[in-house]
Structure formats: C-alpha cells, structure tokens
Length: 265
Image (tube, rainbow, N blue to C red):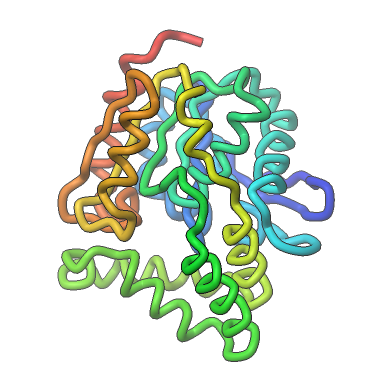
C-alpha cells in the first residue's frame, strides 16, 4: 500500500496493473478490499488506483466530518501523487457522491464515469436526521449493531441466503472502522450537496449500474440516466447495494465492455 498526506489525514491506496488509469472508489463502510475480485479482471489492461477513502480501511478520518469536499480533495491529492492526467473513475455509493464533487472541480481529469449503486440527490430531511442519529448512536453503543443493520439492508437476500462468505467479507471490512470513523462519515454524507443540477453538465461517456435488489430506488438511477446525455443504465440481477462484491464476474464484464468502447485518452 502506498500512502500520502491530504491536509489533516494520511490516506492509503493500492496501485496495480499497467495501461490507462482507472480509479476504483469503494462504498461506505467498506474499504479497498471491496474490489479484490475485480482487480484480476482489469489489471492486465489497466493501471488501477484503489484508495481507502478517508476514515475507511487504513486511511485516517482527520478532523471533523468526512465531507464530500474533503473526499474530493483527497482524490485530487492521490491523482497528483500518481501523476494521473486523465482517468476513468468508478464510484460505488459514497464513491459516486464524491465523484460529483470531483467532477465539479476537476472535470478535465475525467475521461469517463461509472456511477454504481449511488444517487445524485441530496439527503432528505428524514434521511439526514437518520444519519446524524446513527452517528450519535454508534459513538454511544459501538459499531456492532450498526454493522449488522448495514449488512441486512445493503446486501441482497440472494447473497444472504447463498453466499455467507460474502456477508462475512463485508462484515470484516466494516469491523475495521472505529465508532469515530463511522460517525465522521455519516455526518459527512448528511451534508452532501444536491448533485442533480450537475448531471446535465456531464458530457463524457457515463455508465450507471444498479443492483436488482438495491437499497437505492430504481427511479434514482433512471433519473441519472435521463439527465446525463448519452449515458447507459445496466441492472445486475440478484444483487443489492454492493453489486461488485456480490457478483464480481458480472460487474467486471460490464466494466470491461464499457471500457473497450471508450476513445483512447
């Protein structure tokens, strides 16, 4: 793992493979190991940059909430460190949230986007309150109850029934986060801006991926597809919010197909 300091936090990330740069951004509350089964499918043709987002995995939280602005700054710092002029960016859930912020500020570095298991709209008053309440609760009660709630909500019923190994792998990644880490990320997500107005500005190849049993309503993905000119929406069967972890072969095949049709950069 490589590391770099970004303002108030030290960040860790993995670099592997050769070819055009692809940045893979995992969901909350997992870490770069989320991509383990995808790496072998891509590293023969692409140079993969795979961070632990701020407060996840080995990366530090720093001071205050892990806002999308901080996460976008972190991503820009890693791109600078790795001398990335232009790359394909793949973001799952919170990885997608931060990519909207990164696009607003660093769009010249983005050759193509994959927005997976994410949404563009800001938190509703109800969901914001729920995130802030969860942040307070985890600080008082610890992470165990929060983790089990996340596992039950974000993985598909198919995965729960047939793949206990994937459930255990997700739990192991979640267990790496401290109560302070989880609270800091929840508070940062609660503050994320509305990115729906940003969608019409995205003028590069864009793939939108959803799980058939995703916790994000299908209409959120359809909204992004309508608002991003020329974008494509694909739904992966028998998966929830962590489609790349639940069915990596299908997820990887869709990525390779999308990448193969991109212009060179």
